[in-house]
Image (cartoon, rainbow, N blue to C red):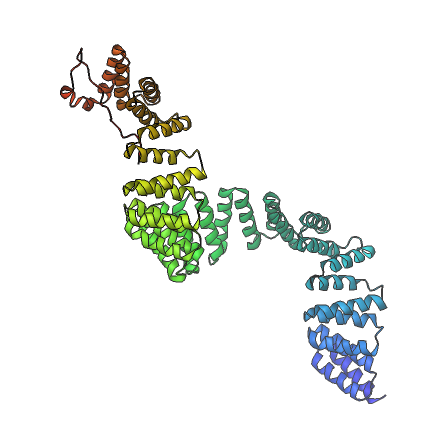
Amino acid sequence: MSAGTEYYAAAVRYYLKGELDKALDQLLQARDAGEDTAEVSTAMAQIYLEGRDFERAAEAYSELVSLDPANGAASFNLGLALEAVEKFEEAREAFRATLEHEPDLVDAYLGLAGCSIKTEDLKGAAQAYLDYLEYEPDSYTAIFGLGVVAQLSDDLDKAAEFYNRALEKQPDSEEVHTNLASVYAKAEQYTEAANCYRQILKTNPHSLKALEGLAFSCYREGFHSTARTHYQQLVKAAPDSFEAWYNLGLVNQKLEEREDAVEAYQKALGLQDDSVDALLNLATCLHEIERDDEAKQAYERVLEIDADSAAALQGLATVIEDTEDLDAAVPYYARLAKLTDSPEPIFRLAVALQKAGNWDKAAEAYEQCTTLKPDWADAWLNRGVVFLKMEQPDGAAKAFDKVLELEPDHSDALLGLASVHVREKNLDQARKLYSKIVEQRSDSPEILFNAGLLEQKNDGHEEALAHYSRAVELKPEFAEAHLNRGAALRSLGREDEAVESFEKALELKPQLAKGYFSLKPVKRARPAAKEAVTSPAGD
C-alpha cells in the first residue's frame, strides 16, 4: 500500500469519527504523497461543505472542476458553495455547467433560479423554476419561487396565484402566508391579508410579526377598535417595542381616544426619545385636549432635534395662536416662511398679523403671497380687507378687482368692493354690486338688509321693501330689518303695514325707540325709521 493510500485511509477513519480537521490534514498529506488529486479534492470539498466552510469548499470544488470540467456533481456543489458565500453570478455559471454536463441533476434549476433572483434576473429565475416543474410538477419550492418572482416583479395577481398553489402543497407554511399577506397588503386587500396573519397565528400563536401584521391590516381596513385590541396584545407581548407603542398611539388617535394616545406615545418616547413622528403626534393630541403647555414642550423638543422642522414650527405657532398670544406666534410663522419656497406659511403669518391688528405687517406679508403666487384669490382678498382697515380705499379696490379678475363671481370680493364704494360715497356703484351679491347670496339676511338700505337711499322703496321683507322672512328676530321695512312701507304710503313693522321692531329691540321724540312728528304717533341702522357692507 502506498503512503498516499495510507493517508487517505486515515482521513476516512478520522472523518467517520467526526474529527474533520484531522481528516483534512491526512488528505493534504495524501495529496502530497501522490494520491489521486481528483479523489482527494472531492473528499476535501465534501468535508469543507459539511463543515460549512464554504469559501474553502468553493476553492476545492473549483480545483476539482478544473481537473474534470464535465463533472456535473462537482459543478453543482461548487454552485452551492458559491451561493453560500454570495457569489451569485459565479454560482449561476456553475449551475449552468451542471445542467450542460449532467442534465438529470435537475436540482441545479432551483440553484440557478435562486441565484438569478439575487442577481435581479427575474425572467431567468422564472424560466429556471418552470424548467424544474417540467420534471417535478408538484414541487412546492418551485411554485413558491415563482410566487416570489411575481411578487418582486409587482405582478401581484400572479404572485397570489402561485402562493395559493403553494399553500395547496403546504397549507401551514408560514413563509407562504407571510409573503401572501404582503401581496394582499400591497394590493390594499387588507381583509385577505388579515386572514393570512390569522392563519399564521393558528399554528404559531407567539408570532409577533403575524400579530403586528394583523393589527396593521385591521387598521387599514378601518377596523380601528379591533386594531387597537391587537396592538394592546402586542405591547403586552413586546413591551420594549417602540413600533408597537407608537402604532397603539396612532390607532387611539384615530379613535379620538386622545388621553390613551398620549399615554401610548409617551411610552414609545420612553423607548426612543428622539422620534420626531411620535413627538409631533403627541403634541397634536395634547393640543386637542387643551394641554397646551405640554404640547408646546413636545414641539420645542422636536425643534431641539431638528431646528428646521416645518411641522413643529407650524404646530407651535398654531398652539400659541389658539391661546390668543398672537404676537408670540408671529416669529414662528416668520421662521416657517424662511424655510420653504411655498407661500403658505407666509399666508399663515399674514393671518396671524391680521388677527393681532398689525395691519402694516399683514399687508406686507399678503403682498409677498401675491408676488409668489399672483393668482391666489384668498391672499388678494385678505390684502383688500387689510387695506380697508388701514383706510386705504384705492389699495383695497385694486385688491378686490384682482380677485374678481380671477373669479368674477367671488361674492366676498364683491362685498369688499361695495364697502369701498360706500366709504367713498359711490352709492350707485355699491348698489349695482349688491344686486350681483343678492343673486348669489339671497339667503343672507344681512346682505339683503344692506342691499335694501342702498335701494332706500336711492329712493328705490319697492326694491328696498322686497329686500327687507325677505330678510325678516329668513330671520324673524332681525329688529333693524323690521324697522327699515316700516320706513319703506311708509314711503310707499302703506301706513298701517308700516306701523305693524315698527311695532315688531320695538317688540324685538326696545332700544330702537331711543331718540324717537327728537324726530319730526308724523300724522299719527308712530315710530319713525332710522335711515341707517347697520353699515351697508361689513368689513
